[in-house]
Amino acid sequence: MNTLLGLTFFSLLGCPAPPDSITFSGTRLADYFPFDGERTWEFQNSDTSITYRLDATLLVDETVSENAVKRYTVSYTTDCASADKSCVDGEELRAVQWSSDNTNGVFIHSYRTGGLDMDGVPLEESTVFDPPIQVADFQGKRGDIVETVVDGVTWTSELVAFEDCPVQVSSQWTCALFRLEHDMEGDGYPIEGDYWAVTRYNVVAFDLVGDTGRWELRKTDCEGDCDGVW
Image (cartoon, rainbow, N blue to C red):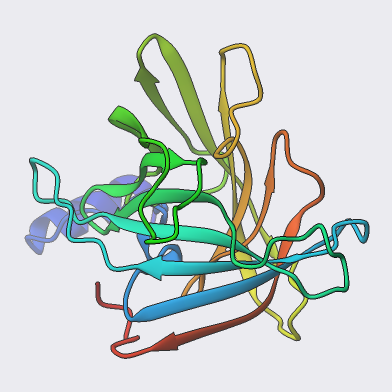
């Protein structure tokens, strides 16, 4: 059947003509950043001179923005796994507040680096982004870039690749690699850099600009409702 006859045939049947091609709209990216349950992660640095591990904990956070987007804070603390007496066990190095959902996408709302006092209260106020920095749209494909302008600074996040996850646990996971960058002076610590995320487990490796080495997942746990709904 030639093209003209084919189109006439489908029209007579009351059916739309077949499309010339199928467009791939992308993968659901918010699924790579789940915040359900009581999650913990343990990371080890690829630089063997780093004498401590890094524990990450999903904190209870009831903060809700004006458009009712739920936010979730991940706190990163030292785990002195060696005999290095200069290491302070349980010291918070940074905390990052995220949001992730299949309507809006994935965002970073704020961060802090000042640590906590003896009562667990932050010693310094958080740096808040208004608008929040978008890390990913709700769905996307390799090469997609999202852009956010905050206080005159342009942040870009690119979905660089889908590749094997650089983790230290035994796995065959495929990660989405996101590269978050900005156009201001300075290194953008502690959020600028590369993030490897995988469905069901969230960020499993990250290499921050201004940091030493890449942090790679050593083990992870989730208690409670860990069903992918958050």
